Length: 252
Ligand code: PGA
Image 1 (tube, rainbow, N blue to C red):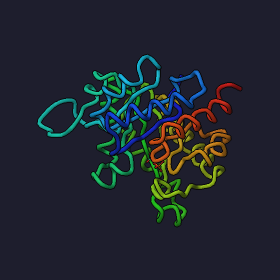
Image 2 (image 1 turned 90 degrees about the vertical axis):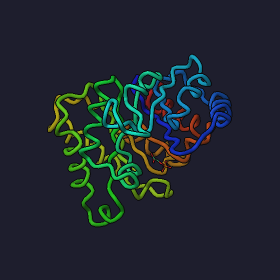
Image 3 (image 1 turned 90 degrees about the horizontal axis):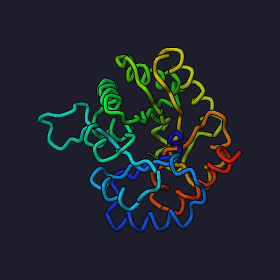
């Protein structure tokens, strides 16, 4: 089962948080397809979260990996290390990494290769800024991000793309669902036509997804799931969003 609903906890959490979150989540999740869910805690808590989740097949991933496997790179964490901890995916190129930590498409490309070499599924984040959106350059910007991130990658056995407009993240604003759907269609077309050797599994939407807007997003044909920040910190809300996804997509 591909990963469809992914929690990005960003710089939040503690061992007590993991325990409380899991309590709330398991009380409210009524699906059986645990494997469609992913959680990306701070890397420091991956091990603890895994022990709290126990035998349930929820996938655990990281929010970032380094572009090298080993070396004198103080503070970094490699794809092989997260794999060693049992991670199955990593978010790569989140806009917060691009903006705050100056990650370029070229660095992101190297991270994608690292993920692939270590059998970690990359969730590549792309998205336009508010200005780019207002000047109607969204498609162009996204196409460029995709091409630059993928052009030196020979093969990727699997790839998930998350479309996350920068202006929608943490703002309570989202494009309308039909707009997102057409962006996702374009993303799929670009990857399939330009990079036929890359196995694009799905395109998720991220940016202010919550319990109120999730249904209208999941109704769209080309929205294959969601990458959720703020709302995912609440175990109950994350479970209820996942339930909606199951009702619409999986149990049909
Ligand atoms: P948000 O964050 O749901 O809080 O907008 C999404 C993300 O940054 O991945």
